[in-house]
Length: 376
Image 1 (spheres, one colour):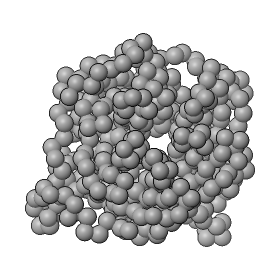
Image 2 (image 1 turned 135 degrees about the vertical axis):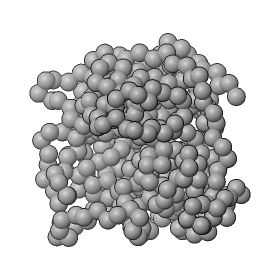
Image 3 (image 1 turned 180 degrees about the horizontal axis):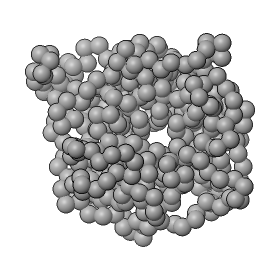
Image 4 (image 1 turned 90 degrees about the vertical axis):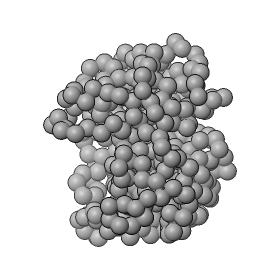
């Protein structure tokens, strides 16, 4: 089910510059005077031999036993019919950071994986944007479900279509990015690189529905709910609400499990706009809202949303209604800095793991503060 007539869901509308009616969300939460988070880096947490260096680290996941899976893109690529080289490793470490093993060698759906997440049963799910597959590994390391389908090699060189011209197909992916589950074990997959939508499957992998489409966010990134420019990250809370990180439009959409829009969340805490970014030129006009790259939701008595951006390179701790409780870090290459944070796991609000992609490392963050009271 596509998002046909979805604007009817949103009571606030205004006339856009194009002359069409645009949906407008409630105003975002104001987040000024945000304090720093009392976090510290655990130095040299991962332990592996010097013959086994990390490349681009795109994802990190932690199961109920504390085992850690790192999604690594190594420097010695495998071969495969992708545009460019295939490269993906799934590395397992124990709770102390000691390397245990690699899993997934030779799995057909692994080519250029984008995210890894554990479900509540300690199954590992891998979202591969290169092969357009989503794979479920059981705790023993065997693939027990595949969603989507990897294109066959004879189809030739891959040319990614323009997102605005993409025609999504039910049950197939084009540029999947992340995954989450609700209390009924329904599966939600975000697509951002070509298709721009949320896809819903039941626990058996049967197609249920989809919503979302490519589109601009409008002024102050607060128009046109359900219009995405790269749903790059996604999470699901205990109530079954879906948090879709719309990187290109600098906002997080919140939907219920049927795709009805609830609100936007923004990372709009003040920052130094004159500071040079870690990569690229200094922008002339920096927006107040920054772009969500990765997120996670804690599973304690009170759930918190943690989100990271690439610039100014911060970690944000948020309530589920959008209040920013604290921030940590900045972009860079030193301790306490991040260079394109691409994956995030939060076993608790006091223990977090960051896949610091362009610094080629996993960062463990801890705090001695046991609780944080959300002021509302």
